Image (cartoon, rainbow, N blue to C red; front, side):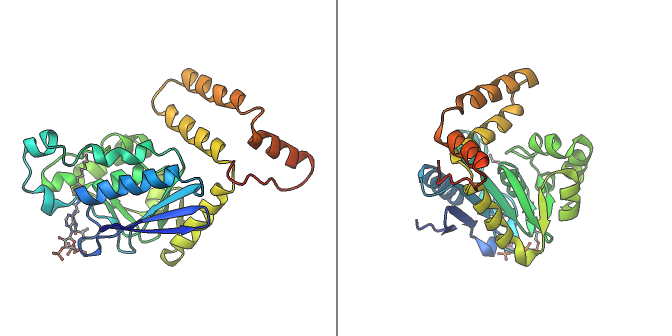
Length: 258
Ligand code: CO8
């Protein structure tokens, strides 16, 4: 896959998508978001891939949506013309696990994109913020919705209203990221974690992702009912037979992408 604003690699069953507009600190523009959707859908459909990593550079995962591109827009362009819109949410349609591996600036639309990943591994250099108010707009891709659900209302309001950035340690304390590692170990750690996930049965990983995401959209009772359907449906599948046989035979399970 060749893209203008992305670099693509694979490591065994792990795909790495790297945002690549270094001169603009990976500011997210229309072309990059279209390319990102294309790459995500291709890896989602590729049976050789079990987990996807989305990353940026050492200096910036992404410093937000591209202000130079947006500055000239009016309402007709954004809503009517469909810029800065639906192509931001392709990542939500991906069924395989997506890990965000973030370093440096994770700001505005960059923080919103990061929050659409399944979980985040952060370099100790990472700084998270929602500074949209300073460029005269409200967040548009979940900053006012996913951030308070993740880190709580008080800290989210503080970040959204003052533009205060939080560092990786504070992000880990609040649950925004799952692990913090030294900046020079970020990709090594992310690929190791993604390799662990891609050795698990893919069908079950996809069910877990779907069920966890369901938890944010429904009541507890309905969510547990949803989970239970997947649990029951898992019996009789090759993954369940292999996983439980391996346990009883005291050997490591071998799922091979089941
Ligand atoms: N857009 C465009 N270009 C950018 C952006 C950006 N968001 N951020 C940085 N750049 C560019 C700079 O213009 C500069 O370019 P040049 O060298 O040509 O002048 C280059 O990147 C390097 O930036 P700086 O010189 O500013 O680097 P510093 O290290 O001094 O500062 C900062 C780094 C603090 C990250 C600073 O660049 C900054 O404040 N950037 C803007 C951050 C921001 O406001 N982000 C939010 C943007 S709004 C948004 O994201 C809305 C999302 C809505 C999504 C809705 C979807 C439906």
